[in-house]
Image (cartoon, rainbow, N blue to C red; front, side):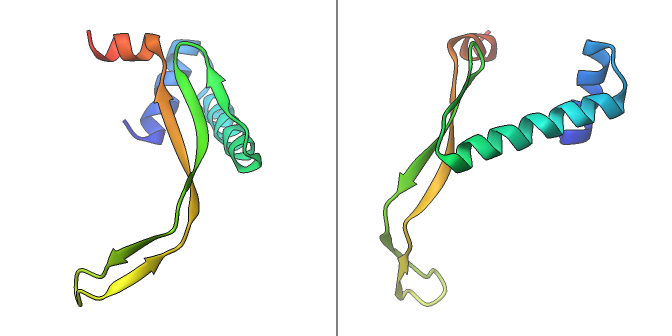
Length: 91
């Protein structure tokens, strides 16, 4: 399912216009992104938790040349599925 299909599904199930569904989805994504940027967690009970994890610097290998390269430390977004979502997926 892509973003357009998700917007259509939201509009249908919530009985709102596609424009309203798009604004709601965009606002949700924007606010989750802002919270993660600040380092906060976003927990949606039954669905899951978005969080930020730190990935340490490490040494990698360039597959074309075989040379070792340094990969800088960075922050990455993580998602852990909630119990209800996990149950739904496993039905």
